[in-house]
Length: 315
Image (tube, rainbow, N blue to C red; front, side, top):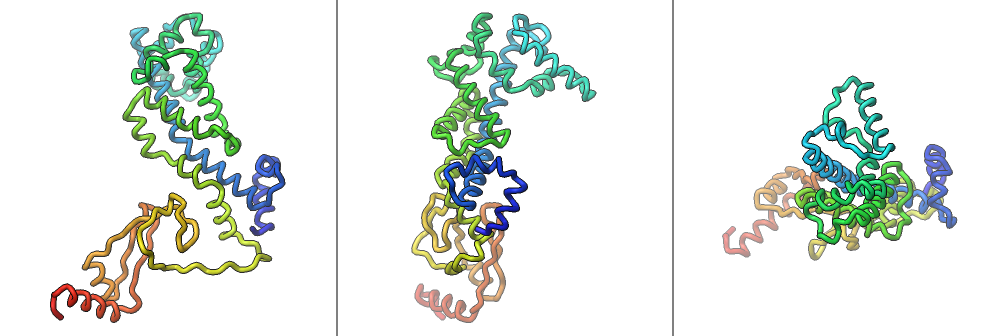
């Protein structure tokens, strides 16, 4: 890629940040492609991590409210270790400083992720609350998984990944990322099968992880080519293909790598519009608009008429 462009980007991002992606001495284009892939992976994990965090705190909040017989359980629950009491005090102070009423909904939202995962650590093994929450707060979990120690280990891994993702740190090198992604979706299902269904429908992690580095290398080389590199052959803008293919699954296309595509069926009215010299607007994946126009309308008209004659519709 263009070395001048890379140097300018490196200055803004800081060489120290990019050093983590070029420890093996790779080229600038590979370094930046790794950085972009890492960013895409973090982005794809954001929504399942967010859903897991919200599902956890809401499940625990509901159980604690029922146990204490008040939605303001944080005012009456005893036996909390000092660090959790401090977090409750900090949440109250933050709401007061912001001029907001201290309501159960605001308190729950203000408490950090670590406050909730901390219910499954050793301090709550002694109070018994951790074991009770493990057994009651995840109604759809298998019985064997409603174990405080198992949940503590699982939520610690999720919290560690969440902290790296939310702080823009490197995760591209984690060999168990697929397993961790699966664990996140699984704990969501233990709280709510419906939320799990939504998380799966929105999920893009698997696709991005499977496609790997090549799409980012191609984008960088295409948009910021090396002036000294030989010019690449220009791919056709329009191609006739034998069958529909799913570009997002890595199938080679006449245009190189592509993220995906839609299939459009042209009805008679569309062909007639092209024949009349009009332009068709195609909505691609609710994101891009592309336009289709026939530059040889007379030939299209002849082809349509020939096709109709072949089908027995006369001249």
